[in-house]
Image (cartoon, rainbow, N blue to C red; front, top):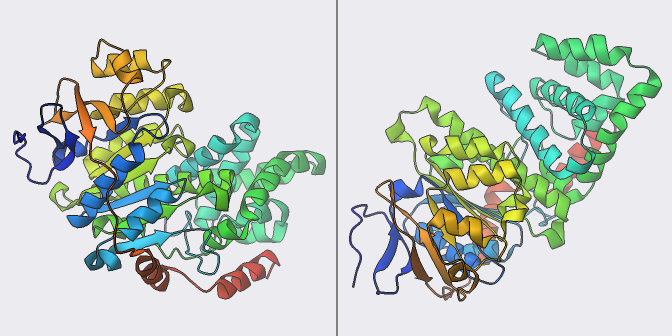
Length: 426
């Protein structure tokens, strides 16, 4: 029995229902976002992989942010030869071939306050336990100053706080009178003791984050070698391997937050295009709670009209802040639940419209319960048996990585030489 009730020929197949019919999701309904929840080992990563393999075969553009690395490796290895040139493989731990990603690069004047706010939110996400209004105030004004000055990177944050000469050079480019007033009239009046107390947390935290070569050599490049907007508009693929075991947990979370908000900013930039010219693009985020700041709520509500679809996966509701939980569940058009814990079952059962909570706590691996959209209308919850793990033959990982290195990476020695000159005050 085949479920052919979806007109959209560009649908994806999630698996089969118990009666043998296909569970499908059309392109228009994918734009309303997909939310996956389930315990470790229940089948989330396999479903994500199968969805991305389908996107690869159909020539669709997408990005994957993977905090573990296994999924990123599998997608790269399974890339068809004809799509090799479409793929950018970003692995910060590939120390000999640093890719440039500068969140401050090329931001239009009108978008600079928003970009500064997004970066502040990313820092707040990882420093939450030691966050305070003074830290946020100084950090915001620091980022606004750096955004106005050509050639700035996040490596300039500690320096502008400690180096008055560098700060004065930046002020020559300051456009916003409020930002200029803060540095010239307020910060300049801080006593030495107060200034030291105020800036020490930022210097210590940012310095610690940017000290590992993997992150420093990526974020310290003035010109980004990956263009998020171009990747989206041309239907390319960005695979981000943030394996915490190689990069470190906090740097991985920070970079994930920077990248996810970069996609939101690129999507918002599509407002200048007529709707028919906005190419569909999907952002897959595994364990998304690691880098989803509270400002991510705005991304969820706005992304659809710019043709940025989100597929968000994680393990249990306690990983999300109340604001983010409400935003995700409230904005996800399709909710898919693999086996979950008893503490999450009541809320997820209510969202799906399932009376039996045990249906969610006792589900076998690679099976899920879902409430999908069909032509924009929520369907009744149904069980879906997802496809088994794909048989990835051919091993095209090296070809994909080597091609990506050639296009998007710079020699480590050249990158580190430029960074060393900057840090030395040259």
